[in-house]
Image (cartoon, rainbow, N blue to C red; front, side, top):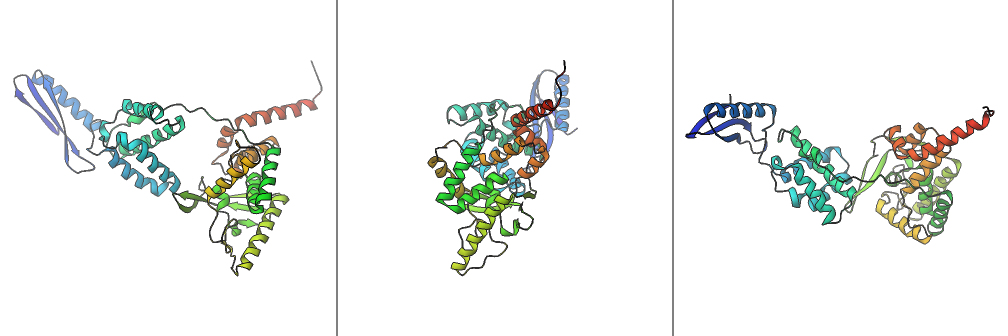
Length: 377
């Protein structure tokens, strides 16, 4: 057994068990207890501590949550998008580190976390959704500590973050989308084309910003969505799509004509600047040679001004994606096809997000079949 006991004074025993080395500092770790009673009582405690150490219950490290967060973020940079890591850093710096940064990882308790979550909502006015993001970061970081052997269990697993009401999907109707496209085209034909493409394909904002002319297959009326532009601070970065997979989206004649018009405009712009427009050029770019994409933030800013001008302040740019999805569902397009066009990881995601609209579509299908049958009874 890696430990022992000694009687410090009559009826007072010191029990000590070796627990390996601190995974961060490399120093030897010991778990000790003071037991009052006889030698048999001390031996029972020694046996229990030894068993707990063997199962990992007494593993620990002097590392603080700040130490853990720094190492964990390094792993995140390898596997997650720059925008996700950037968001993690901001939440850690502003809301987590002030409360937990100096706390030893093995001393963090669920009750501490629940108090933190409550304080963030009451004192800082954070929304339940943001607090749940904070909880997710803490839980993932502590789970990594478990994998590394820093702690035996994850205290965040027993914490209670606030519940977040599921938001209703409320896409704009056809008339509202038409008004937005008309106003956008009047103000900036190029931005009008961007919005038309967003409404027709359901592609995400960053995916359309990353679209290059090589991705446009005019001959077969399709575009390939394979990348996305994200903003990390003031810097633009190109990355994989949200699901790390490319997808091909068929285009209707009207949307193809929009892309043809966009090509004509950028060709004219390049010619005037004596620039070369190659296949790597971005479809939407401020540069004559198409070498730099539109920034997602620029697109959102343009849309926010546009929606106010047409009296639709509640409509978000992302709602054009909802518009595309719900119109496809209403038209009876199979869920798997809708999922593929939207770039969902699987059809289950589509079913979850658009359940209400699928129910309405199912009722419409029932009415169609019912109308074909004779009345009996």
